[in-house]
Length: 143
Image 1 (cartoon, rainbow, N blue to C red):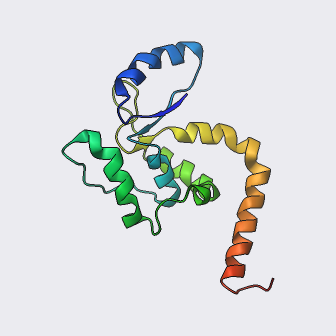
Image 2 (image 1 turned 30 degrees about the horizontal axis):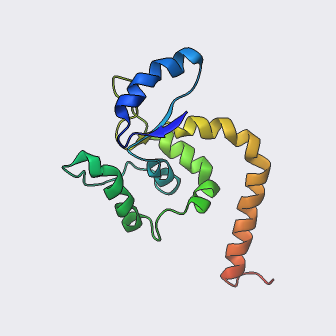
Image 3 (image 1 turned 90 degrees about the vertical axis):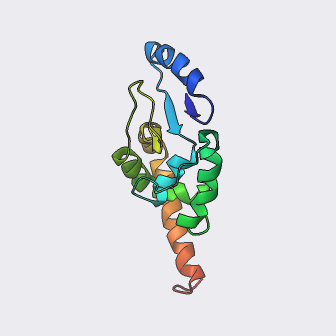
């Protein structure tokens, strides 16, 4: 089960024991899914000014991202850095006393680690093709 915190903390706390008893992983990004995407590009916890109204954290965080990631987060590019993504998210992961990721933490790396072997050959091809296209666009290789 995948969710972000946004305004769902009460629901997540309610279903967490049920997920655990049924053997499901509860994958949560706090405050939003973009936290997971952030870690594809950056290795440190975001240096982000938390708004006084915590209900605006996700919205403000999404608006802040282009200031630290040139051009903003491109989901199609994040997958190309999945190994860094996993490492960075894992390194910065912290839970609260209820087992819920703390702000700017995500356990999405658990799902990514499980899925990576299933997509590995195709992903490797995508990464190599992306590198080739980048070189071509920069005029470093001939068509």
